Amino acid sequence: MTGRPEHSGNDYDRTVSPAATPALELVGRAGIAHRVHAYEAPDRHGRERDHRPSYGTDVAIALRVAPARVFKTLVAMVDEEMLLAVVPVDRELDLKRLATACAARRAVLAEPQAAERATGQVIGGISPLGSRRPLPVVVDASAMDHETVFVSAGRRGIQIELAPDDLVRLCHARSDRITRDHGPG
Image (cartoon, rainbow, N blue to C red; front, side):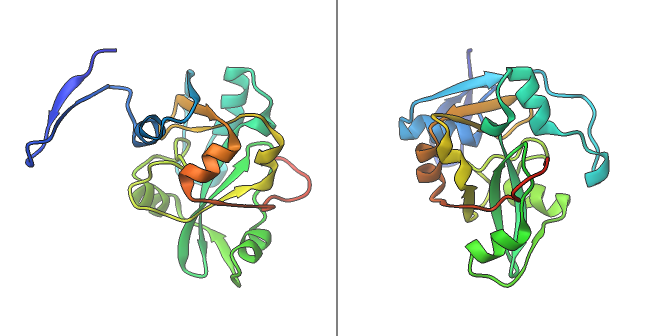
């Protein structure tokens, strides 16, 4: 894909691909083995949690991948500190386990607008890689059960497939059990 030149005030020029996202740039710069998967993102969306589609399940269906290998990124507040929790789309985040993993007293999901402001990405396209401001990341330990996992590339319609060890290393994340034992997410 041809890019367009981007110019900055500090005389630094680079070519930017129209499909580039900070997550893809980070993975590319790190030289990590990965694959990029595009899919048709659902048109429907909603701001309220109860009215949003299940973006992760839609990804698994579109890419014909087991939902346990597709990981969603949720923004949480843990003792007033914002962080990213990365869990499989077929599981639910356990806020008590997340708090315990962070040696904290309390964890709650962040409001969608706060999540979008902090990451620079929209709900359904939040990536654990390349957020607007650096946030701590906790990846569910189940990721290590797979040779590769899928995470958002920072935009709806694009996923990055990479080894879970590489994901943890690139995010400077810790890995812990942070999902409920059973149930859909």
